[in-house]
Length: 218
Length: 242
Image 1 (cartoon, rainbow over the protein chains, first blue to last red):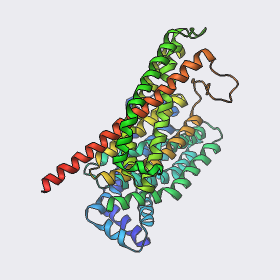
Image 2: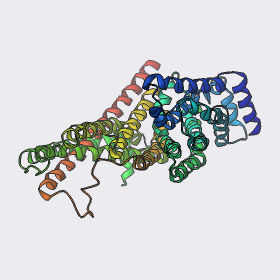
Image 3: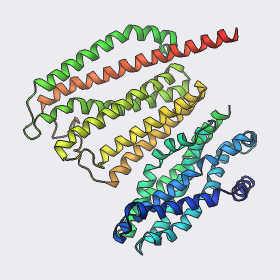
Image 4: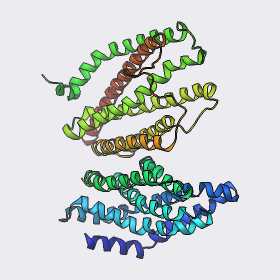
């Protein structure tokens, strides 16, 4: 499992794209928002938590089809399916690698971009915490979507259509944590719900992803 | 003799062929009686006036939008557990019907909301959940269309239906948490103290029965079409091979 994780991480870093692209996309979305809604500070302060969460979610979405597609094309996915490691483990590692290369940089970059959107002071720890808790769920859900569409020629758009509705609860609770934190309210309730969703998806969805992948590999 | 015998496409076709005219006839009768009764022979609400009458389309459509997903869930489970092709095709056949019901509920709701709430759309929990349900229907149908091998498509969509059901319910509660709404709570439940008055309730009941039968008729018809389409495909493939 560790060997697979190191292989995926090395591929993501050396092939380029993974790291940089998601981060750059996140940056551009955040920069474009003031152009769209105007530069008034109070307005930006009000929408900052939501925009940061939405930007992170879209940046995460961008790299989803790379999780499995390349391994599918060159056949290494078949090798992994016949290896002693169960497919459930493979998809969990794939999701973890995706989170380390996409989710983690987003979590670290979000406070910096929060400055651009004039996020109020008490919001920073909550924003970072909510993203750190929520992005693993996004990666695991995304792996499920990638497993569903892996055999398709042009699965990219379909992947977004399938995965985005699944992201709704995570986005609602995550953005709510950041919003309440920024407004100085108590964010414990949505925080616990967010943590619950993340734990639940990590525990259960790899089984669904592995089942789907087996059907696709038949 | 068990229920599972009707999982045989031939038996299913024979039975559904016999049942279909009755179901469609009953659906038509219920809808005509219910709608005419509702539209022309009920009093106007003392606060809402004549706009209340859109309830005879709005409520049954919303009912079927949810129950059609439920039916797809059951059919998907049957496909995963027992691998009867008819049930996979029935789930496929139900999806567009359910989607249209969702759209009807959303559109009639908007038309009703404009005079009552002064707005076509509000980010109310019920409205938002229905919009999300609509997105789930879209994704489900798109996945069916995208995959060429019918068995793989049935497998993948049934898993998507299971996972989607969990997340649809989750979204429902997340959305409730996210925003308080304009939409009233349930006013048709059996145990509530305040319910719709009987004058409106009886025609509404007939309309709901009509929509259930209409849904049943459409799903039967579409499943029969799917079975025949697959047979034609098999015959064509055999001829090409010969």
